[in-house]
Amino acid sequence: MKIVVFGLSITSSWGNGHATTFRALFRALHSRGHKIVFFEKDLEWYASNRDLPQPDFCQVRLYEDWEQIRPIARRALANCDVAMVGSYFPDGIAAMTEMLESAAPVKTFYDIDTPITIATLREQERTAYVEAAQLRGLDVYFSFTGGPMLREIESRFGLREAVPLYCSFDPERYHPMPASRRYECDLSYMGTYAPDRQPRIDQLLVEVARKLPDKKFIVAGPQYPKTIKWPSNLRRITHLNPRWHPHFYSSSRFTLNVTRQDMVKAGYSPSVRLFEAAASGAAMISDNWPGLDTFFKPNSEILLPANTEDAVRYLIELSDHERRFIGKNAMERVLAEHTSEQRATEFEAAITARESLRKNIAAETSQTLIA
Image (tube, rainbow, N blue to C red; front, side, top):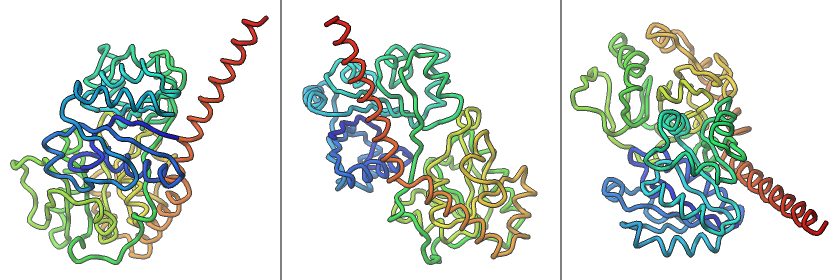
């Protein structure tokens, strides 16, 4: 298939979790023989932080102005098998209109921010990147979030089909690595600053660091306010190139996952960091939310502290054998269920099902007209 995508940056992962999700999925689809053309707006903060300027698994069309790129996008849509607009694409509403008016056989939306999108559309008819009225024209709504929200999306917005397409990881890139002195610590966290995540980071990492001054801690990620006062035994890394992520996770005794509040409320919204950390063999500590136990089994594949004291207890009381056992169990789980190859086959299956349905409808319509 030729797949045309309009998405947030794939060339830069700076403060952009979409990049690793796109990279894993499209690399796997490319390896299965598909061609991907990716339209990306050339934004300043990504242009100065490109860690994958020329992906070898897709053709990137950088542009500055939508009106200038529109004729090229229109030609690409006229000659593709699948079209996709991603959430938070800067010209998303215009791209959705172009896609829906095109002859693309299968028209899709990939919402990597489903709870945020739906929370906004419940209150108003549009977000910055999609209008509610546009959704009913889709063939498939691919959602970062699974669970009950999928049925709400279908019923509320008149969608034909909403299916989960969770993030994934590439096992060739994410696997246990020898511990690196550069990233050795007792507890780490990786993620862009978000105000609604910070209280849980404070509770499950910063306060733990204050209570355990002899332990080492790392927080990696951009956009943290300079006003935050970090403990002296906590090291900050502003941005970490994805190629170092498995080294980072493999060098942490434990690593922390904290989820955005909209994702917590919706549930069934695993972060790509969960899968990448698990693939690297890390023992994970996480906040809890509905549906988490469908991805990892509590206590044997992931640890779910209720408070600071629980997190402190994990660091002090769990033996290395117990810690490695938890990491090994989580790694086996994601290798069985959440690789990029598996996600690519799920994508293909959804597209094939939609194409088959469309052909059946066309055949039935033709027979009715003949009769």
